[in-house]
Length: 441
Image (cartoon, rainbow, N blue to C red; front, side, top):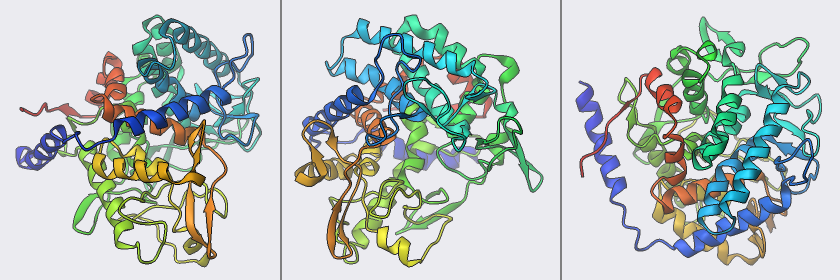
Protein backbone atom coordinates (compact mmCIF):
# COMPACT_ATOMS: atom_id res chain seq x y z
CA UNK A 1 0.00 0.00 0.00
CA UNK A 2 2.82 2.39 0.88
CA UNK A 3 4.45 1.85 -2.53
CA UNK A 4 1.24 2.98 -4.22
CA UNK A 5 1.23 6.16 -2.14
CA UNK A 6 4.89 6.86 -2.84
CA UNK A 7 4.85 6.38 -6.61
CA UNK A 8 3.21 9.67 -7.66
CA UNK A 9 5.31 11.56 -5.13
CA UNK A 10 8.47 10.01 -6.49
CA UNK A 11 7.43 11.03 -9.99
CA UNK A 12 6.92 14.61 -8.80
CA UNK A 13 10.38 14.59 -7.25
CA UNK A 14 11.90 13.26 -10.47
CA UNK A 15 10.19 16.01 -12.42
CA UNK A 16 11.53 18.55 -9.93
CA UNK A 17 15.07 17.21 -10.33
CA UNK A 18 14.88 17.67 -14.09
CA UNK A 19 13.67 21.28 -14.06
CA UNK A 20 15.00 23.24 -17.05
CA UNK A 21 17.14 26.04 -15.61
CA UNK A 22 18.07 27.59 -18.94
CA UNK A 23 15.22 30.10 -18.78
CA UNK A 24 16.03 31.20 -15.22
CA UNK A 25 17.71 34.57 -14.56
CA UNK A 26 20.49 33.69 -12.10
CA UNK A 27 21.96 37.19 -12.32
CA UNK A 28 18.73 38.62 -10.94
CA UNK A 29 18.93 36.19 -8.02
CA UNK A 30 22.52 37.13 -7.24
CA UNK A 31 21.55 40.79 -7.37
CA UNK A 32 18.83 40.29 -4.76
CA UNK A 33 21.14 38.17 -2.58
CA UNK A 34 23.67 41.01 -2.67
CA UNK A 35 20.94 43.45 -1.61
CA UNK A 36 20.03 41.16 1.30
CA UNK A 37 23.71 40.95 2.24
CA UNK A 38 24.01 44.74 2.31
CA UNK A 39 20.86 44.99 4.41
CA UNK A 40 22.20 42.53 6.99
CA UNK A 41 25.58 44.26 7.08
CA UNK A 42 23.86 47.50 8.05
CA UNK A 43 21.36 45.97 10.48
CA UNK A 44 23.60 43.61 12.49
CA UNK A 45 25.57 44.33 15.66
CA UNK A 46 29.25 43.80 14.83
CA UNK A 47 30.53 45.89 17.74
CA UNK A 48 33.43 44.03 19.34
CA UNK A 49 32.83 43.25 22.99
CA UNK A 50 29.11 43.98 22.76
CA UNK A 51 26.77 41.69 24.71
CA UNK A 52 24.59 41.53 21.63
CA UNK A 53 27.32 40.81 19.09
CA UNK A 54 25.93 39.10 15.99
CA UNK A 55 22.28 39.95 16.63
CA UNK A 56 20.38 41.45 13.71
CA UNK A 57 17.37 43.73 13.56
CA UNK A 58 13.82 42.50 13.31
CA UNK A 59 13.09 45.34 10.88
CA UNK A 60 15.01 48.30 9.54
CA UNK A 61 12.89 51.03 11.15
CA UNK A 62 13.38 49.79 14.74
CA UNK A 63 17.09 50.18 15.41
CA UNK A 64 17.11 48.53 18.84
CA UNK A 65 14.87 45.45 18.47
CA UNK A 66 16.55 42.27 17.29
CA UNK A 67 14.68 39.14 16.25
CA UNK A 68 16.23 35.80 17.19
CA UNK A 69 14.58 34.33 14.08
CA UNK A 70 16.18 36.95 11.83
CA UNK A 71 19.50 36.13 13.52
CA UNK A 72 18.92 32.46 12.70
CA UNK A 73 18.30 33.29 9.06
CA UNK A 74 21.45 35.42 9.02
CA UNK A 75 23.54 32.59 10.48
CA UNK A 76 22.38 30.27 7.69
CA UNK A 77 23.03 33.03 5.14
CA UNK A 78 26.72 33.43 5.99
CA UNK A 79 27.76 30.37 3.93
CA UNK A 80 25.86 31.86 0.97
CA UNK A 81 27.58 35.23 1.37
CA UNK A 82 30.96 33.48 1.37
CA UNK A 83 30.08 31.36 -1.67
CA UNK A 84 28.90 34.48 -3.52
CA UNK A 85 32.21 36.22 -2.82
CA UNK A 86 30.63 38.84 -0.56
CA UNK A 87 32.50 37.78 2.60
CA UNK A 88 35.82 36.10 3.38
CA UNK A 89 35.49 32.64 4.94
CA UNK A 90 37.91 32.80 7.87
CA UNK A 91 36.67 36.21 9.01
CA UNK A 92 33.06 35.06 8.69
CA UNK A 93 33.83 31.95 10.73
CA UNK A 94 34.99 34.23 13.55
CA UNK A 95 31.76 36.24 13.29
CA UNK A 96 29.71 33.05 13.59
CA UNK A 97 31.80 31.85 16.55
CA UNK A 98 31.30 35.12 18.44
CA UNK A 99 27.58 35.12 17.60
CA UNK A 100 27.33 31.65 19.15
CA UNK A 101 28.97 33.07 22.31
CA UNK A 102 26.21 35.68 22.41
CA UNK A 103 23.49 33.04 22.06
CA UNK A 104 25.02 30.89 24.80
CA UNK A 105 25.08 33.92 27.13
CA UNK A 106 21.42 34.66 26.36
CA UNK A 107 20.45 31.04 27.00
CA UNK A 108 22.08 31.31 30.42
CA UNK A 109 20.09 34.47 31.25
CA UNK A 110 17.01 33.48 33.24
CA UNK A 111 15.37 36.83 32.43
CA UNK A 112 15.51 36.21 28.67
CA UNK A 113 15.33 32.45 28.27
CA UNK A 114 13.45 29.41 29.55
CA UNK A 115 14.53 25.79 29.06
CA UNK A 116 16.96 26.96 26.38
CA UNK A 117 14.32 28.82 24.37
CA UNK A 118 14.79 32.55 23.91
CA UNK A 119 12.68 35.66 23.86
CA UNK A 120 11.30 36.32 20.37
CA UNK A 121 12.67 39.87 20.48
CA UNK A 122 15.81 40.97 22.29
CA UNK A 123 17.72 44.21 22.52
CA UNK A 124 20.21 44.34 19.68
CA UNK A 125 23.03 45.72 21.84
CA UNK A 126 22.49 43.87 25.13
CA UNK A 127 20.75 40.61 24.19
CA UNK A 128 18.23 41.20 26.98
CA UNK A 129 14.51 40.49 26.53
CA UNK A 130 13.13 43.43 24.57
CA UNK A 131 10.06 43.89 26.76
CA UNK A 132 7.56 41.87 28.78
CA UNK A 133 5.33 41.45 25.73
CA UNK A 134 8.01 39.47 23.91
CA UNK A 135 7.19 35.80 24.42
CA UNK A 136 9.68 32.99 24.93
CA UNK A 137 9.16 31.47 21.49
CA UNK A 138 9.56 27.83 20.52
CA UNK A 139 9.46 28.48 16.76
CA UNK A 140 11.75 31.50 16.73
CA UNK A 141 14.24 29.56 18.84
CA UNK A 142 13.93 26.68 16.35
CA UNK A 143 14.81 29.04 13.49
CA UNK A 144 17.80 30.33 15.46
CA UNK A 145 19.04 26.79 16.22
CA UNK A 146 18.44 25.66 12.63
CA UNK A 147 20.51 28.57 11.36
CA UNK A 148 23.25 27.69 13.83
CA UNK A 149 23.32 24.09 12.59
CA UNK A 150 23.63 25.19 8.95
CA UNK A 151 26.41 27.66 9.77
CA UNK A 152 28.34 25.16 11.90
CA UNK A 153 28.47 22.59 9.11
CA UNK A 154 30.11 25.19 6.85
CA UNK A 155 32.37 26.58 9.57
CA UNK A 156 33.50 23.38 11.36
CA UNK A 157 35.37 25.06 14.23
CA UNK A 158 31.99 26.27 15.55
CA UNK A 159 30.25 22.87 15.64
CA UNK A 160 30.73 22.20 19.33
CA UNK A 161 29.14 25.51 20.30
CA UNK A 162 26.26 24.99 17.85
CA UNK A 163 25.52 21.54 19.28
CA UNK A 164 25.61 22.99 22.79
CA UNK A 165 23.10 25.68 21.82
CA UNK A 166 20.89 22.96 20.37
CA UNK A 167 21.37 20.66 23.38
CA UNK A 168 20.24 23.42 25.75
CA UNK A 169 16.76 23.56 24.18
CA UNK A 170 14.30 21.33 26.02
CA UNK A 171 10.95 21.24 24.23
CA UNK A 172 9.67 18.85 26.90
CA UNK A 173 9.16 21.98 29.00
CA UNK A 174 6.73 23.33 26.39
CA UNK A 175 4.05 20.65 26.28
CA UNK A 176 0.37 21.55 26.29
CA UNK A 177 -2.79 19.47 25.90
CA UNK A 178 -5.95 20.07 23.93
CA UNK A 179 -8.85 17.66 23.58
CA UNK A 180 -6.81 14.88 25.11
CA UNK A 181 -3.83 15.28 22.74
CA UNK A 182 -0.36 16.57 23.54
CA UNK A 183 1.35 19.26 21.48
CA UNK A 184 4.41 21.46 21.64
CA UNK A 185 3.27 24.92 22.67
CA UNK A 186 4.15 28.19 20.95
CA UNK A 187 5.93 29.35 24.10
CA UNK A 188 5.35 31.19 27.34
CA UNK A 189 4.88 34.86 28.23
CA UNK A 190 5.29 35.11 32.02
CA UNK A 191 8.62 33.66 33.19
CA UNK A 192 7.53 33.61 36.83
CA UNK A 193 4.31 31.75 36.03
CA UNK A 194 5.14 29.87 32.82
CA UNK A 195 1.70 29.01 31.45
CA UNK A 196 1.89 27.62 27.91
CA UNK A 197 0.67 29.74 25.02
CA UNK A 198 -1.19 28.30 21.99
CA UNK A 199 -0.40 24.85 20.62
CA UNK A 200 1.28 23.80 17.40
CA UNK A 201 -1.80 21.74 16.61
CA UNK A 202 -2.08 22.50 12.87
CA UNK A 203 0.33 22.18 9.96
CA UNK A 204 2.48 25.31 9.63
CA UNK A 205 6.15 26.27 9.65
CA UNK A 206 6.92 24.19 12.76
CA UNK A 207 8.19 20.97 11.12
CA UNK A 208 11.69 22.00 12.18
CA UNK A 209 10.64 21.80 15.85
CA UNK A 210 10.00 18.05 15.54
CA UNK A 211 13.32 17.45 13.78
CA UNK A 212 15.24 19.45 16.38
CA UNK A 213 13.31 17.97 19.30
CA UNK A 214 13.57 14.32 18.25
CA UNK A 215 17.23 14.64 17.25
CA UNK A 216 18.48 16.77 20.16
CA UNK A 217 22.13 15.90 20.92
CA UNK A 218 21.15 15.71 24.60
CA UNK A 219 19.14 12.48 24.98
CA UNK A 220 17.40 13.87 28.07
CA UNK A 221 15.96 16.71 25.99
CA UNK A 222 14.64 14.59 23.12
CA UNK A 223 10.91 14.60 22.45
CA UNK A 224 8.62 11.80 21.34
CA UNK A 225 7.42 11.48 17.75
CA UNK A 226 3.93 11.75 19.23
CA UNK A 227 4.05 15.52 18.74
CA UNK A 228 4.69 15.17 15.01
CA UNK A 229 1.90 12.62 14.70
CA UNK A 230 -0.65 14.61 16.69
CA UNK A 231 -0.89 17.89 14.79
CA UNK A 232 -3.69 18.25 12.21
CA UNK A 233 -2.69 17.63 8.59
CA UNK A 234 -5.80 18.79 6.77
CA UNK A 235 -5.89 18.31 3.00
CA UNK A 236 -7.74 20.52 0.56
CA UNK A 237 -7.58 21.64 -3.04
CA UNK A 238 -7.72 24.77 -5.18
CA UNK A 239 -7.89 24.71 -8.98
CA UNK A 240 -7.48 20.95 -8.84
CA UNK A 241 -4.23 21.16 -6.85
CA UNK A 242 -4.39 19.26 -3.56
CA UNK A 243 -2.07 19.56 -0.57
CA UNK A 244 -1.83 19.71 3.22
CA UNK A 245 -2.61 23.30 4.09
CA UNK A 246 -1.86 25.70 6.92
CA UNK A 247 -4.43 27.73 8.84
CA UNK A 248 -3.80 31.03 7.04
CA UNK A 249 -2.41 29.55 3.81
CA UNK A 250 0.57 31.91 4.01
CA UNK A 251 3.43 30.86 1.77
CA UNK A 252 6.09 31.20 4.46
CA UNK A 253 4.52 28.26 6.32
CA UNK A 254 5.46 25.98 3.40
CA UNK A 255 8.99 27.41 3.10
CA UNK A 256 10.70 27.96 6.45
CA UNK A 257 11.49 24.41 7.58
CA UNK A 258 12.58 23.40 4.09
CA UNK A 259 14.98 26.31 3.76
CA UNK A 260 17.06 24.77 6.58
CA UNK A 261 16.40 21.02 6.16
CA UNK A 262 16.14 18.97 2.98
CA UNK A 263 12.78 17.20 2.93
CA UNK A 264 12.98 16.51 -0.83
CA UNK A 265 13.48 12.72 -0.59
CA UNK A 266 12.01 12.09 2.86
CA UNK A 267 8.61 10.47 3.36
CA UNK A 268 6.81 9.95 6.65
CA UNK A 269 5.10 6.72 7.66
CA UNK A 270 1.96 7.78 5.76
CA UNK A 271 3.85 8.47 2.53
CA UNK A 272 3.73 12.26 2.90
CA UNK A 273 6.48 14.25 1.20
CA UNK A 274 6.63 17.86 2.34
CA UNK A 275 8.78 19.07 -0.55
CA UNK A 276 6.10 17.98 -3.00
CA UNK A 277 3.50 19.47 -0.69
CA UNK A 278 5.26 22.84 -0.88
CA UNK A 279 5.40 22.57 -4.67
CA UNK A 280 1.64 22.10 -4.72
CA UNK A 281 1.05 24.93 -2.24
CA UNK A 282 3.24 27.30 -4.24
CA UNK A 283 1.49 26.44 -7.50
CA UNK A 284 -1.83 26.99 -5.74
CA UNK A 285 -0.72 30.43 -4.52
CA UNK A 286 0.40 31.35 -8.04
CA UNK A 287 -2.84 30.18 -9.63
CA UNK A 288 -4.96 32.04 -7.07
CA UNK A 289 -3.32 35.35 -8.01
CA UNK A 290 -3.69 34.62 -11.72
CA UNK A 291 -7.37 33.77 -11.25
CA UNK A 292 -7.99 36.96 -9.27
CA UNK A 293 -5.98 39.46 -11.32
CA UNK A 294 -9.24 41.03 -12.47
CA UNK A 295 -10.10 41.90 -8.87
CA UNK A 296 -6.69 43.08 -7.66
CA UNK A 297 -4.34 45.22 -9.75
CA UNK A 298 -1.27 43.86 -7.94
CA UNK A 299 -2.01 40.28 -9.00
CA UNK A 300 -0.81 38.85 -12.33
CA UNK A 301 1.17 35.98 -13.83
CA UNK A 302 4.31 37.90 -12.82
CA UNK A 303 3.09 39.35 -9.53
CA UNK A 304 1.96 36.82 -6.98
CA UNK A 305 2.56 35.46 -3.50
CA UNK A 306 0.55 36.04 -0.33
CA UNK A 307 2.25 35.70 3.02
CA UNK A 308 2.65 37.44 6.38
CA UNK A 309 4.03 40.89 5.62
CA UNK A 310 3.61 44.64 5.98
CA UNK A 311 0.42 46.05 4.46
CA UNK A 312 -1.01 49.56 4.05
CA UNK A 313 -2.80 48.96 7.38
CA UNK A 314 0.22 47.58 9.24
CA UNK A 315 1.80 44.17 9.61
CA UNK A 316 -0.58 41.25 9.04
CA UNK A 317 -0.23 37.50 9.39
CA UNK A 318 -3.63 36.85 7.81
CA UNK A 319 -2.68 36.98 4.14
CA UNK A 320 -2.75 33.67 2.31
CA UNK A 321 -4.58 31.62 -0.29
CA UNK A 322 -6.99 28.68 -0.26
CA UNK A 323 -7.11 25.93 0.70
CA UNK A 324 -6.72 27.15 4.25
CA UNK A 325 -8.48 26.94 7.60
CA UNK A 326 -9.05 30.68 8.03
CA UNK A 327 -11.80 32.70 6.38
CA UNK A 328 -12.31 36.47 6.61
CA UNK A 329 -14.69 38.64 4.59
CA UNK A 330 -14.30 41.82 6.66
CA UNK A 331 -13.79 45.12 4.90
CA UNK A 332 -10.42 45.61 6.56
CA UNK A 333 -9.17 42.26 5.29
CA UNK A 334 -10.40 42.97 1.77
CA UNK A 335 -8.50 46.28 1.86
CA UNK A 336 -5.17 44.50 2.35
CA UNK A 337 -5.94 41.38 0.31
CA UNK A 338 -4.32 42.76 -2.84
CA UNK A 339 -0.96 43.18 -1.09
CA UNK A 340 1.93 41.16 -2.53
CA UNK A 341 5.20 40.51 -0.71
CA UNK A 342 8.14 39.65 -3.01
CA UNK A 343 9.53 37.34 -0.32
CA UNK A 344 6.57 34.99 -0.87
CA UNK A 345 7.35 34.15 -4.50
CA UNK A 346 11.11 34.24 -3.93
CA UNK A 347 10.86 31.90 -0.94
CA UNK A 348 9.19 29.39 -3.25
CA UNK A 349 11.98 29.48 -5.85
CA UNK A 350 12.93 25.78 -5.31
CA UNK A 351 9.26 24.80 -5.72
CA UNK A 352 8.14 27.00 -8.62
CA UNK A 353 11.36 28.23 -10.26
CA UNK A 354 9.87 29.52 -13.52
CA UNK A 355 6.98 31.37 -11.88
CA UNK A 356 9.22 32.71 -9.11
CA UNK A 357 11.96 33.81 -11.52
CA UNK A 358 9.47 35.77 -13.63
CA UNK A 359 8.15 37.39 -10.46
CA UNK A 360 11.65 38.40 -9.37
CA UNK A 361 12.36 40.11 -12.68
CA UNK A 362 9.02 41.94 -12.49
CA UNK A 363 9.59 43.03 -8.89
CA UNK A 364 13.03 44.32 -9.80
CA UNK A 365 11.51 46.33 -12.65
CA UNK A 366 9.38 48.37 -10.21
CA UNK A 367 11.49 51.38 -9.26
CA UNK A 368 9.52 52.18 -6.09
CA UNK A 369 9.82 48.60 -4.83
CA UNK A 370 13.62 48.58 -5.11
CA UNK A 371 16.37 50.16 -3.07
CA UNK A 372 19.74 50.69 -4.69
CA UNK A 373 21.52 49.09 -1.74
CA UNK A 374 19.08 46.77 0.05
CA UNK A 375 17.17 45.29 -2.88
CA UNK A 376 13.45 44.61 -2.71
CA UNK A 377 11.25 46.30 -0.13
CA UNK A 378 8.86 44.21 1.92
CA UNK A 379 5.54 44.57 0.04
CA UNK A 380 3.37 46.64 -2.27
CA UNK A 381 -0.24 47.17 -3.30
CA UNK A 382 -1.13 48.85 -6.60
CA UNK A 383 -4.71 49.70 -5.65
CA UNK A 384 -5.11 50.65 -2.02
CA UNK A 385 -7.99 53.14 -1.81
CA UNK A 386 -7.34 53.96 -5.45
CA UNK A 387 -3.63 54.65 -4.98
CA UNK A 388 -0.37 52.74 -5.23
CA UNK A 389 1.30 51.80 -1.95
CA UNK A 390 4.89 50.65 -1.52
CA UNK A 391 6.28 49.56 1.82
CA UNK A 392 9.16 51.68 3.05
CA UNK A 393 10.58 49.04 5.35
CA UNK A 394 12.58 45.80 5.31
CA UNK A 395 11.98 42.79 7.57
CA UNK A 396 14.90 40.56 8.55
CA UNK A 397 13.15 37.19 8.28
CA UNK A 398 11.84 38.10 4.83
CA UNK A 399 15.30 39.05 3.56
CA UNK A 400 16.64 35.88 5.19
CA UNK A 401 14.26 33.42 3.55
CA UNK A 402 15.03 35.03 0.19
CA UNK A 403 18.75 34.36 0.58
CA UNK A 404 18.33 30.74 1.61
CA UNK A 405 15.73 29.75 -0.94
CA UNK A 406 17.26 31.59 -3.88
CA UNK A 407 20.56 29.87 -3.16
CA UNK A 408 18.95 26.49 -2.51
CA UNK A 409 17.63 26.66 -6.06
CA UNK A 410 20.76 28.16 -7.60
CA UNK A 411 23.06 25.54 -6.14
CA UNK A 412 21.23 22.23 -5.76
CA UNK A 413 19.87 22.58 -2.19
CA UNK A 414 23.18 23.95 -0.94
CA UNK A 415 21.87 25.47 2.31
CA UNK A 416 19.47 22.74 3.38
CA UNK A 417 22.01 20.05 2.47
CA UNK A 418 24.53 21.53 4.92
CA UNK A 419 22.31 20.67 7.88
CA UNK A 420 21.81 17.13 6.56
CA UNK A 421 25.52 16.47 7.25
CA UNK A 422 24.75 16.61 10.97
CA UNK A 423 23.99 13.08 12.24
CA UNK A 424 21.64 14.42 14.91
CA UNK A 425 19.50 16.00 12.18
CA UNK A 426 19.22 12.64 10.45
CA UNK A 427 18.22 11.11 13.79
CA UNK A 428 15.54 13.78 14.06
CA UNK A 429 14.06 12.67 10.75
CA UNK A 430 14.37 8.97 11.58
CA UNK A 431 12.92 9.28 15.07
CA UNK A 432 9.83 10.95 13.61
CA UNK A 433 9.29 8.04 11.23
CA UNK A 434 10.72 9.62 8.07
CA UNK A 435 12.50 7.43 5.55
CA UNK A 436 14.73 8.58 2.71
CA UNK A 437 13.76 7.36 -0.76
CA UNK A 438 16.34 8.46 -3.32
CA UNK A 439 14.85 8.73 -6.83
CA UNK A 440 16.56 6.78 -9.61
CA UNK A 441 17.52 9.04 -12.52
